[in-house]
Amino acid sequence: MILKKSCFYQKIITAFLIVFFMLLLTNCSKKVYTPTVVKRVAVKKTTNTEIKKRNAPATEREFRAVWIASVANINWPSKRGLSTEEQQKEAIELLDLLHQNNFNTVILQVRPQADAMYKSDLEPWSYYLTGTQGKAPSPYYDPLEFWIYEAHKRGLELHAWLNPYRAHHTAGGEITEASIVHKNPKLVAKLETGFWWLDPGNKKTQEHSYKIVMDIVQRYNVDGIHFDDYFYPYPSYNNNKDFPDDKSWKNYLNSGGQLKRDDWRRDNVNTFIEKVYTNIKKAKPSVKFGISPFGFWRPNYPASVTAGFDQYSELYADAKLWLNKGWIDYLTPQLYWPINRTDVSFPVLLNWWNQENTHKRHLWPGMSIGRIKGDEGIDEVINQIMITKGMLSKSPGAVHWSIAPLIESPKLMEAIANGPYKKQALVPGSPWLHNSKPEKPTLAYAFKNDSLFINWSSKNSDKVANWVVRYKYNNKWDYSIHGRFTNSHKLPLTLNDSKKVLKAIAISVIDKFGNESLFEEIPIAKVSTRIKD
Image (cartoon, rainbow, N blue to C red; front, side):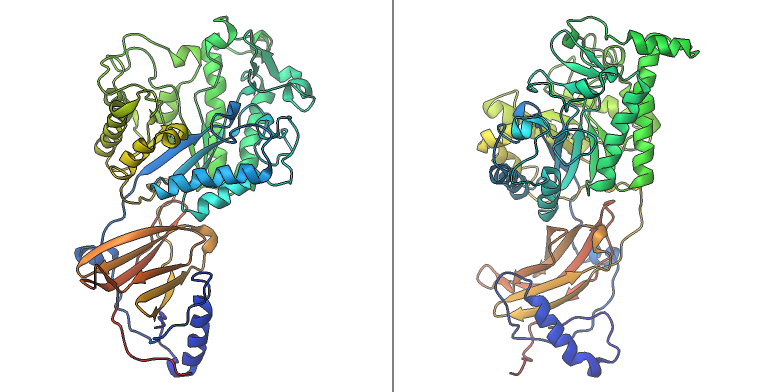
């Protein structure tokens, strides 16, 4: 059958529509399908609410993300110097694993040490790709571009994860002439353990890191920009000595600065965070900005945290302020402790952050899924996921550190995929960014033997993130979520030895802000009209 929104001039265009639809069907798969039944139908227009009254499912919404680290070749690529084919093969295997188990987001580290896992005119190619900083993959390809395409093909979001201030890692190989350590030594400080760090107090450092972010936002179709907990370095990186920023501190004082040194350092980071957020929204509002700070703000916040690391005074990271000000779209505090640890309990910390979420941004905690081994560890992960579903019911989600335990423990992956992630889920929308519904897609369908073939399209395909295909067998609705490049779906007319019969379908489009279009319930009834040769 052929479905068209308007029935005007049907007699004139019938032949054209039949030929057009037959061409569309050639894209359903590699095999060319010739429809045996074609017929126009009138469709009753309905709203989302009306369909839900008929028990059409609301698609699950949940942020299901994993970190994929490139620094020190932790996750990808598995080692330096792999061929282009090997790098791409590993990437596809990781993406397939996530897609097949109903995850929906990848947070990929693309700037591990003032370098680039992508083509950049601002920083050199990463050592972790080829084993030589500044050397491009061979045969040439752009890894970030590849990851984005393959993620979107599977309906996954891709967030680019950057370290804004780390200039060189101890596992980062030789410092070459391409490194910022050599090219702009005034911006960096050497730490006693071998790290090199960009000085956040230097305005040129802030401008350089800002340009890196905006270059990615403007040139790549990323869904998010992500920072982790490395702002000023952990004290242990400099043998617990103070960060060596005397020169930038004196310049600040000489310019008339009035802040105390700790407050000045925090202000350097705060100013950078606000600038990044503000300008991402100006350039490309659909790109989410997220940060994953240390798990608690300060000791005694909440009261159960009586001791421990103080990110506020040691990393100069005021994550509470960023959340209170709404300078982020999602916060991912690294809650890497178990539920039953009384001083840093996972749900207690999550609740504290949730109370600070005055702008109602997304709060998607980071979970360490590999620290506890065996069945006890699996139980802990499942329970933590369920806590986020309960406490953050309007926008549930979590980010898993890292993808490695999911690979190494098929039992863990199976427990997640058959438990809390059993059904596919869309990423929750971000209504503070944009909340208008996209236009409904247009669609056509036809019968072939015992199946229904559906094709759809949108006038604004560049703004599409996902498609949702809903289908009703007997009186029960279900759905499947597709990536932006998919435009067809095959449904059997009957299930379970003909006991369940396909009764209706509905197609909707999800835009890059997470907004869903209205959709129409389309009754399905197999007809006998056939195309004549």
